[in-house]
Image (tube, rainbow, N blue to C red; front, side):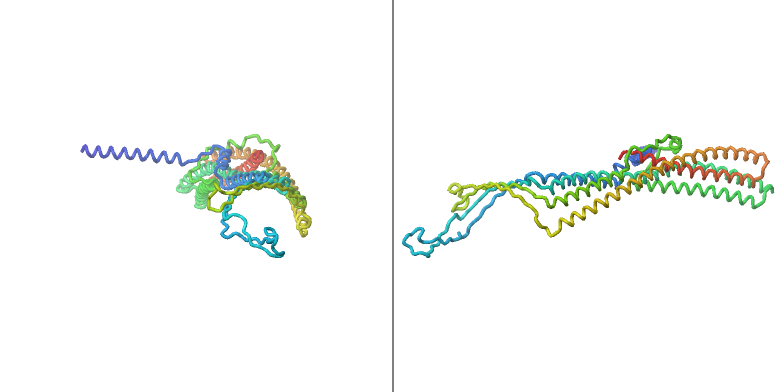
Length: 446
């Protein structure tokens, strides 16, 4: 008996340990968001498109440093070794060493050493190179373009995440209505069954009450399924496998004051401005193709010559060095530079058109957003008042039904008015919150 008790105690201890481990795992595998800003902060660190954009920024920065390094002097060092297996003979007029030798007679002589070693240091510096100078400016501009590309990526991602986030809040709010509707439908159905069993109502009225109860359950189940899908979608957008907990309430967002004066510039405009600047630099670079370039060259070389391999002690040593300056002027390039300039000019014009169009489009979007926000806010406030009045009216109608003043059929008709107003309220709330998060994102300084 003691062994059995001891065994049961051990099993209990194991169960407690497993329970604690499971609880700790479930707590760690959970991501909680208290606000939309929390979602954005998480996306900045984990969302795929934003991370790719940030990596592109680092790549652009590395390219800019690489391009700038081309302006520095290039210094190279080298060492060489030659084994002259057979020295090249040289024909020398014989009368140089023998004055009595007839004219036109030549002698073969070999000059030099069999083993030649050398060490060289060379410097190459493009003192004046308009192409490389402009390339540095273009690389710096590419860094700015990459930065604004990241901002545009964040803008689009934030809009998508905000839509999903507020859809979750609105769905949960609608479920509060649907749960209450199910309770009311159950009460009406029970009341209808009692009246039907007493012969007070017809089968048609009972069927209508049953349909009302089925529809109430169907709406609740549809909202639950929609909520699960919205959460799964948010997990996919944020690349999260863990459970998501949204500790937020839609009621916190519907009565907030919002500033409709936008001080920040839309990231798309900044991006198009950066593209225009890049094309303008390309045009300058195309014009600079006809500019001269100036380079400086210096070389120092030390040589060893010996008759035996690695015999540096008896080797003859000598050094050579030179400095040179080279000026290059393009005279004719087959009209290549001319058409390169034309191509760059058209690119600048195209970029300017795109920038102007984007500015106008974004300005009009801001104007429409202000209109939508004010209109949706007013509609929501109106629907809130109508819903409150409709709920009061429905409460009075229900009292009349309970007292037997009105029939079940009339009660169902009046209850449908409340359901219709609930749908109008949820719709107006959704439109208002959409405009609200768009205004919120518009204020973000990317």
